[in-house]
Image 1: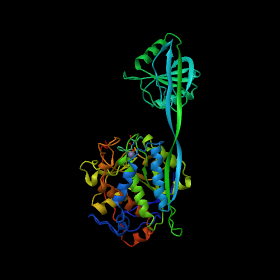
Image 2 (image 1 turned 90 degrees about the vertical axis):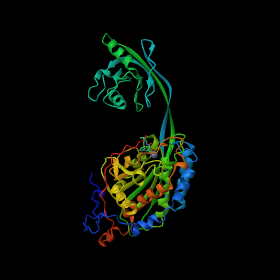
Image 3 (image 1 turned 180 degrees about the vertical axis):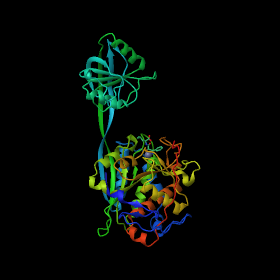
Length: 459
Ligand code: BES
Ligand code: ZN
């Protein structure tokens, strides 16, 4: 894929060049540089107090996706964006809960006490069993058509096994474990009834099949409950006469785990998104900024995936950087690593525009080049997947309160909030400030810095 952003380069000067013109490196002193006047335009206005108050409001009620608590948070976030005069949208998307009403696998009148896959199809089927081993792609025989596939765990995901046998016309799938520990199962996509039994039960059936046909019944009834979760989007448009056509996105997830206050995970990130929005609305820019909060991150980045999927290609093509903030205020996170353990994780473990700008900004402001590492587990993933340079700003290792009822306001550090919002704010501002190319030539651009890869365990 050849995209506009592939032409954007961060030179040794740390500046963005969208023109392909190479400017001389003028400012590469190895020693730390102080914050620039540009940094100050943003960072002097950041109020950790504001951020703290946002976290206080959001964390007083759990914000599990699809619940009233999420809606309460969304209304607050939307209200804040609107009061700043931003073009704001609440984008709904469906999420699904599954309730298992019936899950049976019966062979020769014996109930095997099977467990239905999450997302198993519903139905009551009786048919002959066919042993198809691991059900690897290309190995499933045609004779499975109209029959129930008997499949062993291993090598590929359960979801792939279901897909492979359903594609060959199987009417059901009975999986058995490859270890003696219970009836392990996976996720399916509603294709056919899918039931898991134990290793011993499966091996017994394999033996039995050697002596002649075996008929099985799978009876599964799974109720699907649809709920609604949201993405909140606020657009800040640049001056019409000075528009690079590019878009920078700054995001966090607003949902919490069920019953979790989620003060740090991730009301903290939301508080920084709102605070940066408050500052950028009064700052001239030449590049669109989108402030985003995502629902259902805790269910597998569903909100950010939906957001990216509904973008017109013309928007995706113009997106040059995504800054994701998740868990940016944990007082007890980061052990004794510099800057509270702040690290920038990318999906592929490579540096990109976002990490270059982040390391440069943190060096100027705090004399510490924030390291980078490799990790998914947050909403930078879907942005990366469509080719947008992205990184997750997080303190690592995470605090002991992670995903616990103790993830509360008392464990939030205002200093950490201030630092991360400053680094992300100053980094984004390097892209969106109107004078970027001109000032490159004026020899006052910030220096780039060396920064390290760290293979730091996150939890
Ligand atoms: N804020 C975390 C991400 C995280 C936690 C990163 C701990 C690194 C260490 C995020 O909200 C989360 O918990 N993500 C899920 C992702 C999953 C649902 C796809 C996780 O990591 O379990
Ligand atoms: Zn999180």
